[in-house]
Length: 333
Image (cartoon, rainbow, N blue to C red; front, side, top):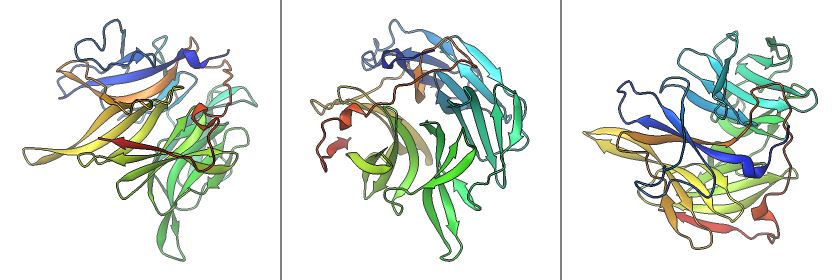
């Protein structure tokens, strides 16, 4: 089963501002139909009921299938295109890192759960959890959700250096075909890095220093800076660059701390940066009751599991024709 870039949709998750018993729901949008206009942003969109409660999290995706976890320690696969869910058998332990991807060698979807010092992999063809014989780094602390790129899962972790008694950030990998762990050095290990993302099929890292976030893209086993983003004074930082469209427009998830009745609340904003004009627009909430709490890129498909999806591996368009050392500067306000 083949997918195309034109079938990609942006899935926006909506949640009530207060827990009043109303279920979360999602809407699907194409890249040129983002909800930017108050009162008209969601006209013509279809609401998709979120399958679990407000405490459930989306922690991964592959070929249009999303990986969910909830407060009951369940792992569920959900295809919002066909409104179908599949809950996995209970895995052996409560794990600190979980990832979901596709093994092209065995034509098999796999879920990996790392519960130090144990690790397990669930293969959809056998429908069983099996221990992973290789071991990850001895002492680590997971800092990001997994990113699935080129047949491997990637996490930002902190590894404890016993000799220097310090924590060192790096990227831990797991190859779904060989079942082997690996390590990739971050472009700037000393910078604050807790976010991985994918930009048009390539692994990307968000590193922050002195109020400026650099987005690094990994190609041919090396890092290059795609763009730099300065943060406005009222924003705390950038969570992720969720999408980079072919025309150069970018979709940012930013956070800030707000105070209400002396209580600090971390709030997330979602902004579109138009490369040609430098204009910035915020995605509007669904209404006064529901606000945006998360977004994922989602390839529309009719499959749940067991069918191979081929994805094109191309150089990101924003790097094509780009001169060495040329960096895009962005200011987010």
